Image 1 (cartoon, one colour):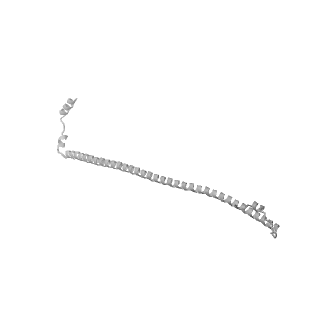
Image 2: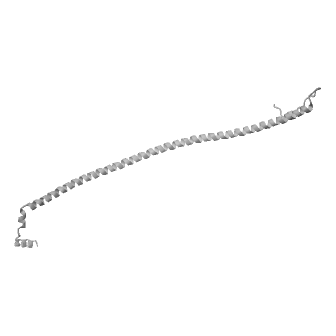
Length: 168
């Protein structure tokens, strides 16, 4: 067991014939007691500081562990968000492609219908032009014909009156 300042203070030496000077020994022991007490106080202070620092280290270790866990959770969450965003982006692209295909198909169908309508109108126009041409040619032929003079002959008034009387 280590000595305490009280043990040093209470220590008594046996006296011999030619012993040490008692005052000198007591002064030395008093100085030794003071120094030893100072060392003990310093040791206790250092032990308290060590305990405080160990508590702080433990606290900071807990904070470090918590931060590491938080970082891992944040990284995992970020990865999940990134993956979900990528999936959502793919879905949006697919939906946009489907809409684009639908719009293109509708436009092509309308284009085909308009092309068919145009072709039908061209045919009808050709038929109309042909009929109109034939009508005009027939009228021209009629105008060129000598029978026109026969139509211009004066009618007999009796015939005209008979016809108009029978109609009435």
